[in-house]
Length: 165
Image (cartoon, rainbow, N blue to C red; front, side):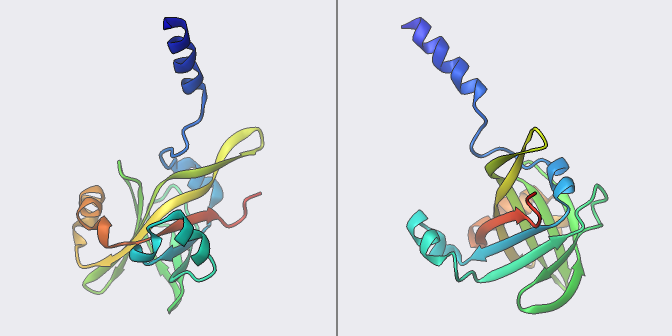
């Protein structure tokens, strides 16, 4: 019985976690990501996500992700032109913040959902993500705290590297 438990524990430690933390190094390597988001109420079940994948509520490209947290830019459906983002790396994920007058739009990459091999190493090919537009500008002081307060009213979705190869 003990031997079976040890073998099971070793097997689990060798497996890559299905949902792993977002590594900023991989986002920098990707440079650009494409995201699609859906209304929270519609995102509840896997079946609903499968049916809805052709009708996202928000499309977005986050471009020029670099080590400099102010280098990224965003282009999204509904608003013309590229806009500057600030990046905050936190415990809950990587937060990209766009200031809009007195409000903020925050896109948070939560975890890696899918992996693939690239040049002999594992890289994330799909991130779970949320997007929220709100008035809590304290996100610039503590992005994780602001996220925890408002994540329930966010759009849910996924982001993928623009050029997966």
